[in-house]
Image 1 (tube, one colour):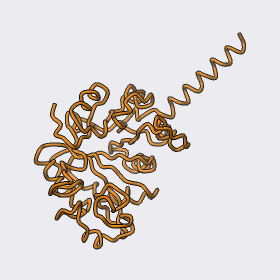
Image 2 (image 1 turned 180 degrees about the vertical axis):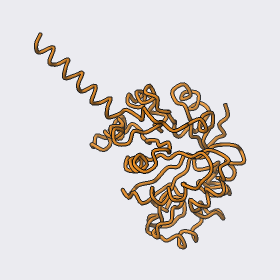
Image 3 (image 1 turned 135 degrees about the vertical axis):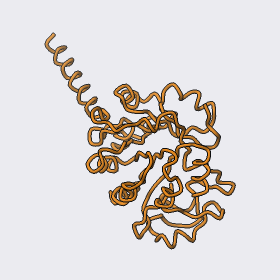
Length: 272
């Protein structure tokens, strides 16, 4: 009986530690009303085979004109200008070797997105194009763990008029916002790497949201295919918004809509 009691106490303590680690923000939450009831066009309303490639100003304008919120990606050029571009590598989108941060803005400007006439826009240009008309989910890319992208991005956002929130796979970005801009809604991006067979410690942390105790996110943006992940579901039960990425057809939306609150989509037009 004594051993059983010890085992139960240990299990209880471990459960409490786990809940503490994955718990989202509970108190002093920012207003999230502007983000509800809106679908979010992934990297704008894009078509990489036509004249509005992903994260281009034309794709951003199309999403705004259609009344969709927008999810897009921000990282830094070599000369520390925030630009809107997804990959760390330029090969897929621009057919150029090298990383975004290895080129200055002037050099990036000369590159074309997916053989179109569109170029890599700056974060400032995207914000001006949106002009507060639709809500934004801004992903900070931190392929290099450098908080400067948060500092410089925030410098542009502090005077922006319109609803926006930030998200990142890297907890450092959320931690920066927790310390410096607690008024801004922040989200942890994730997916179930463990389900895919990844067992590195950082994959365990990312899969089960074990860095939340450092960042206390307001929402969890998780791969819709991994909806059964226990930490994601616990965070939703504890009041965090649950955002699905990336919905690519109607069937995926129908499967996900009861398990998530907001939806990021591409490859089709999502309407309720």
